[in-house]
Image 1 (cartoon, rainbow, N blue to C red):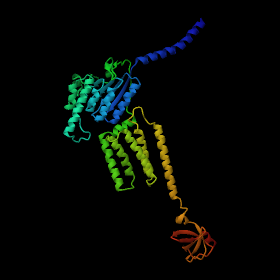
Image 2: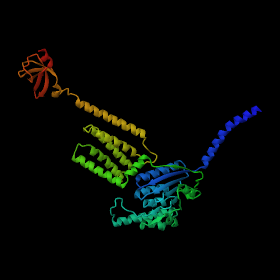
Image 3: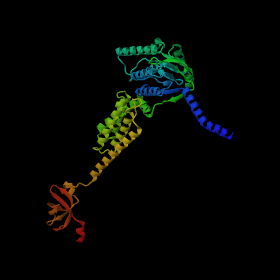
Image 4: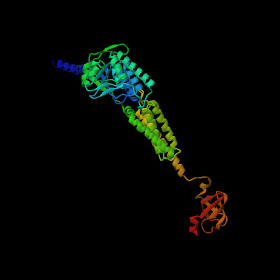
Length: 441
């Protein structure tokens, strides 16, 4: 009987972990993964990069659904086009949720919201006013504006038609800048539902059927869901911040002031360094350069600053500017490529090695400048010579096997006495009696 009890005990010890592991697998298999992205602010290139990266990651991780929380006043047309294209060709169901209360999906946000498989809004939010305007606020020629409005209206209508939404009302958001509250948008069939919060949204989309770009019909299952937030990384947040029109204006102003100051007062260095870095960042902010070319330009600027340090007495200002430019350029170089990122440790290592090399070279140059010249006229100063004729005050001395005309700055010097060369003037030496000889006297 005792043996039976022991056998049962050991069997239990073996089987319980297996049961626990099987139970965990069953729970894991039955739960759904929900990826959550968040857009806050103007739609700019880095936001399009972020959405591309987030949706690609959701696809790679086999997420059941990807929710994009949206709150934007609008943004750039080309960036909006990239986001809409990414959403409409995703291999995972996309839900765009205008939130929190008081949020809006104006202009570019309207295109993004309507392009989703499921569009939702929180109570108190608004959508619409998608009439195109210029980025800088300047007036667009009438014929050109007509073309832009016509294209945008048809594009909006195509998106609404693809998603089974109200094409007429969607088109009015572009042509007449029509806006809609969350209640209006639901009644006009521009959105699919209203949700008080994220949990309410997840509950309402459970069981809904959507059709992906490849034609596959999927029923969304959010039973026992687990959310995974995928926020912007530090570099993306930095690029979005400097893409703000106000920041772009400040950067361009700093660049202008810095470069003008450096040109008018050559050699100040600091204004030129700040102006150069600000200029490339402003070019990115204003859309002249994308992240790749902006990063490359900053790295090339860093190389130029390092080289300039060897020819300019800037006391390390150029090297400091080069380090800052190299780090910033390296960080943003591949920020536009989803899944491709330069290792931070590698950036730190390369920057440290480059800075150390620059400091070493600069130190060598400074030490070389401070070292006494060993050749030529300057190299003779401080050396000892021997008087060959009386110096009273002019005579002849021998230095390094050569005879020189010398003029003494001391009392009369007799032949054979040692003198020290204090100055070289054309072919004449100015000498003084060596202190040892004076003491022997």
